[in-house]
Image (cartoon, rainbow, N blue to C red):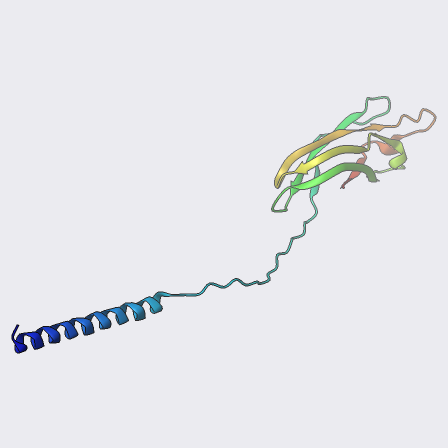
Length: 162
């Protein structure tokens, strides 16, 4: 082969090696650009719980015409739960808070039976939800006492949920 042809062939080979070396270098540099390391770690955070607001115990039963010698009348009702979720109610207790009358008349003129009523479950959020019942109220017939002071009296009942 003539010397000039060998020289051209060597130049082409050297040029090819240079191109290959540059391309390989670019691949290496490009590969490094996309490489990464992984690392674990730790951290902290917080969460809090809310609180609840009192529920309201509503009497829905209508009690009228309490009088000496008449039968006891049932007490029943439901709840207003203003909380965002349900609340657990164990029981509802009723007491006679006061009596409004024109004459002598007081809580001793009335009898509550079953004053503590078991509920024993969660009461849903909302107004007029769920229910309770079981107590009764009756006018006491005091045969030896004039009870005219209790005519047209209003008996105020107090309810407590727990």
